[in-house]
Length: 567
Image 1 (tube, rainbow, N blue to C red):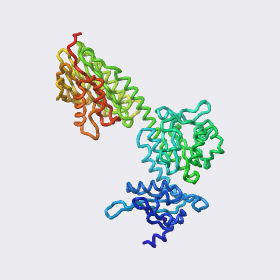
Image 2 (image 1 turned 135 degrees about the vertical axis):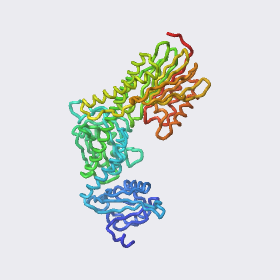
Image 3 (image 1 turned 45 degrees about the vertical axis):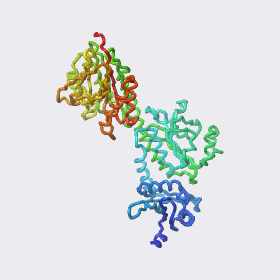
Image 4 (image 1 turned 90 degrees about the vertical axis):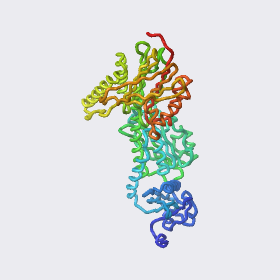
């Protein structure tokens, strides 16, 4: 076996679990110019030529995960004893003992033609598709691009995006001289072979200075990539107006530059800058081709995130415009409310709340949730809230109001579906649209609160004695089903009682049972009974297991007061 391995044309190196080289063959020495004796006992970064730091990162990942890597480019620079750089195909696999425990990693190096690496690049681009654009956050996507390409392509990478992209606005195709000024760019991602990315003049989120006469402006103006194999801080005239950048180039030995614009659907989103420092090989056309492929993939994810940000911003604005700015309980109740939108990854939902004054000092308390997310859910929420206010003016009992509201909501959804068909959208826009609602009427003369539920969680009540309960109430189906008439139940709310209406986002979590969420709310209400309702709202919201919930959270608190005059 040893004879076979020693005489093979396949270059082989084996590292143990501590990343010390325990064996390598002569074929590998012939490829990268490092003898087996010099390699023995050393980690990859000290025992390989070319992108040794990148190889070590791959070896660590294979050792930790057990997932092998096939066909990764291993480039040996001319400095290792050759007239020109030579490219090899390297594969990595984890070695395991009889019990399946990892004992090391083996690298296999094969001589291939440059043409063969076309297929390898496709594999890299495919892997990039799984690791770049994992969320709908433009900043995170940009950082994922930087992380993926170091040290795969470069030793130092930055990704700068236009301010329009970060805010979800419409960017432009390319810079026009007639615009008269350079738009604002912000650093969105950076990565380096050096810990902490000391080469970067700006932290993520900070505004980046773009010299008017520089390769960066050339790329932004033309919309085409720029390859500068040799970068010289002493002789490149554009650096005279940018001494801070020139100093970084000299300090870290930046010798080769590649700038690729990030385009998607005909608009310019930003630029990715690739720099080599430790890797002695200059960028060439094959590097540019791979970089363009990766940036193009990332740009599509960035544009999707930008469009999502724009829609979410519009939905939030619409929702805030439709929700009451302030709620008043008059002389019947002290009231307070909180609304917390869902995390950016999950978009805005259709939560709503309202407090409506009724004759004889009575008060209507409303909380609901339209199924779905985005602008459509927010718009439907606004129409539903308007319908509730219209029906409340009729002074209907809660159960009767929900019966009427159910029919109104069914017509509303049918109208939206018909409009969508007329616009050529084909199938109805919201075939499964639904909504939940809790509608209650409090009468200060009797301290009775009549509650009707349409697929909504029951309220929590903190009684003056200190107990917190979730009263048993008739639980009707959600709005839009049109099956059964709704029923109501009555709750006694003596002076000082607090009733809490909420949406399911407050108590439901995919990692916890709903009983856990209800217990959280109950405990917070019990502990904060003597606080103001504003403080109590903050305390209840503060029990959420995450500051970025997957669903909207709405909370409406009402504390009964003493008897007031009858109007």
